[in-house]
Image 1 (cartoon, helix red, strand yellow):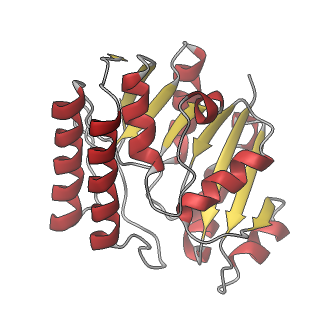
Image 2 (image 1 turned 120 degrees about the horizontal axis):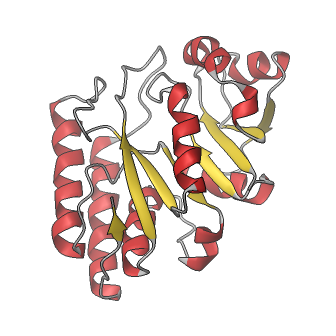
Length: 230
């Protein structure tokens, strides 16, 4: 099993300088950075330090996933943000759970006493609300359905017929369709530290609306099956 660490960037020079040296290269088989035309020196610094950086052709984080899918050589993708929100030391734990037979492993910000130090009142409530909604509507028991930080098998992209869209749908779609296909999913708890420099790219109203529409679409398209969550 080969693993690919996918790192999307957009003006994250401050975070990259602190976080990237903490990632041990032997943890994964390859690291791919998809840079969305940063203007603060992020791709230049990464290339100077030996990282593979690909300039994003499309627009938005959602499409960066798909560009990575086309480029990666790994069987498993780990999504990691270098802005300080993702803890590097959790990478081996995510991979280990995949090796144990899970199809997807979520790095939950709210499991077992874990906490998001980057949440504000609105984002904290939104994460709770959409997770609760998913659990009630689809019969599961997740604590964090929207976090980017996770590992999953690349085969899921085709198996679940994931939607290639500019809208932020992939994280929730992965969760819900794993439920529908009765796949093996688990969470591991880990704090989300505050962002290091730069600005938050997430647009609250836009993202929230997209998530809500996505959940309703999944609810009325297929009947959910219960998955295995431990």
